[in-house]
Structures are given as structure tokens and as C-alpha cells.
Image (cartoon, rainbow, N blue to C red; front, side, top):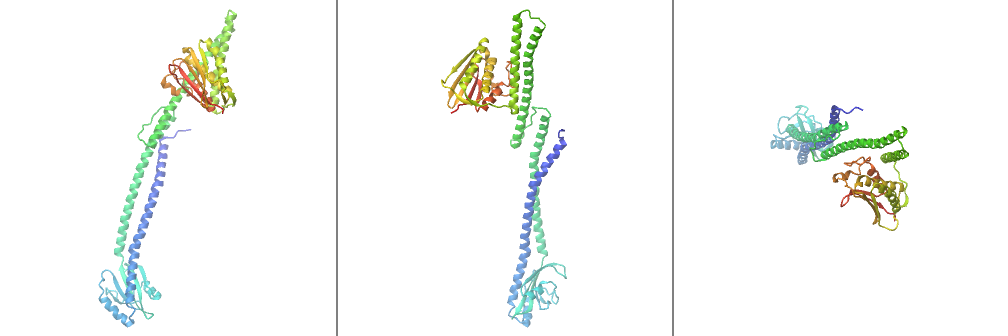
Length: 475
């Protein structure tokens, strides 16, 4: 499968930036739009509805003051009210007759005219104050009017009308809304660019991490990413750097394992092949030589078989085919069988195997006897292989609370302190030159863990290497 190119990475990053901005900035934009809309509605109500209500109250109040006048008295009182009207520059006061003709006007400019705005007839027909906003049919100027009927003894004798220009209000409304829109736009710009900067501070490091991750995926294990942040990006950087180092270590370990196993397999095969050819060619002069050769062939074949079985065992663990045949058993009896088996074998190698039995009673556990025997034999074999120089191996069995504990100690040189944390890792052999695949301890720990126990490894006080196994006892 083709690897993603740098351009494809940039497209993905732009996609992340676009989604981020759409999801975050769109919400801010919606909030600002709703806020500006709500403020515009409030401002509209304050300027236009407030002015309309004010004119309606004035018209109603003035009309109520004229309720005592007849049609004739109404005209005389209207003329007198117009002559004493003082707010002519801001608000025009008109007195109309029942035909809608202006009798008197505070500005003297509209007297005798007939305004064609609809609220006049509505006020006379409905006998209540009515307001109207729009363009004057004659001057085309935007105006706001309020007309209230003058009623005398149930009869409409005239209409009092207030008229004001909306030019100043329109300018004030537009100016205020422009300022509000500019503030909203400035807020949106700040939010947008701050989000853009924030997204860039996340996306650009991710782009660099992605590029290095692709380099690692291409086989350059061990490559490190420069850590620039101490946040989640920094944690991701640390995780990828750690992964890169572990992959490099794993590759190195597996390469060493393959080389080691190849050497381990080649050694017994060379011995088997050499002695088989020697016997086949008749080069052995005596029955003793033939017997010695056959013993070597059998011994090396068994060692080869054990190595193959160990590899197969590890393979079963890796692919999940490893199973236990659990049954009630006496741990003490199983350990003693293994110790007895290896005592004579170690004696021939010049190694003394000592066994200390703490409890006299049996130690019942639930386990797989074959797997546990495999653990004991493997650990005893390791003790002889790596610590045989001490010529002594000590096995101790004792009861520790609700657990049984087994200690297997050799008196060899022990393991380097820096290698102790890795000894149970698969394929790890460290600085040891002894034969083996490096998976024996990993298999042993897997078996002990599946028995709900623990296995600890370390150097013993006074020298040598110590393995401690703890298994839960049956109640």
C-alpha cells in the first residue's frame, strides 16, 4: 500500500483546521449574530416604538382636553392651542376636521392640506388613537404620526395629529447599529484569529509528529521527535519516542535471537552430522568410539529437541494456544521429583544440588503438574548453565501465609544490575555467553502467572542469582 505523501498530510491537516474552525468559530458567529439581532430589536423598540408610544400619549392627552368643546368651540380652541404651541421645531401639531383637512398647524405650512396617511381615518372610525410610520405621500420624507379623535357627546368633531420626522432617529439607529456591528466584527476577528493561532499550535506539531511517525513506519526505528511542549502534544511526542526506541530494541533483540538460535541449532547439528559421518565412513576403530559417538548424537538430539520444544512452547503462548490442565496436586511432591531428577545429573557435572524442605505437611495447590515441572526444570537448568561456576545450587521450599514460596539460588557471578529489569523479556540474553534462546524465563513467568502466582528474579546477598516463585495455596 502506498505511503501518504507530504501533500496528503497537509490536506488532512487543513481538513482538521477547517473542521475545528467550523465547529468553534461557527458557534461564536451564531452567538454574535443572535446578540446583534437581539440588540437591534431592543434598539428598534427603544427608538421607534418609544417614539410612537410618546406621540400616542401626547395625542390622547391633547384630545382628552378638547372633549368639552363643540365643533365650533373646537376650532377656536384649536387656533388658540396652535398659537401658543412652543415645540414647533421638533414636533408638528395639527388639528383636522372630520373630513381629514388640516384646520390649523403648528408650522403653518400644512394648513388647508389633506394628509393621506391611513391612521387619520382609522382614528375617526375606531374612535381611538392610531399611529403610523412610513414615507409621507407628499414629501416622501420618513415620518411618524399619531392621530387621536376629539369626541364631544359621542360625536367626532375633529382629529388631533402629531407628526415628527424620522431622519434623526434613522441616523441614530444606523450609527448605533454600525458601531455594534463593528464591535461584533472585531470580537469575531479576535476569536477567529485566536482560534486560528491555537489550531496552528496543535496542527503544525501534529504534522511534524506525523512525518516522523511515517519515517519510523518506513523502518528508521529509533528516530526521535524533538519535544517542544509539555502538554498533551508533549505526552504524544514522548509516547512515540518511547515506541520508536522500543521498536528498535525489539528489532535488535529479535535479530540477536535469530542469530543466537541459528548458532544454537548449528552446534548440535554439527556434532550430530560429524559423528554420524564418522560412524558411517567406518572411521571409528573400536566399539567404545562408536558408543561415545552415539551418546553424543543422542545427547545433542535431545538438546536440539528441547530447544525446538521451547520455541514451540513460546509460539503457543504468543498465538493464544497455550493451555493448562489444572488439577489438585501437592507442590512439595512435584518440586522434589524435579530436584531428585537433577541431583544426579548435576553431580556428574560437578555441581551440588541442595534442597531444604521447610513444611512437613503437603502443600496443596491447583495447577498443571507438567507445566510446573517444566518451570522447575527450566530454572534448575538455567542455574546450572549461568551459575554453574559456583558448583552449588540451593533449592528452598517454605510456606509464607496463604502462599507457597520456592527459591532457587546459584552461587555463580549473578547478573549485571542494569540487566535485571530485562531478564524476563522474551529473546533477551544480555551479556551472558551461555547457550540458550533467551525465552526460557519468559515462558516460566507466563506459566507461573497463569497459575495466579508471581516470579521474581534478582541477585542474592553474598553473590549468585536468585529466582523466587510464589503460588497461592488451596484453602
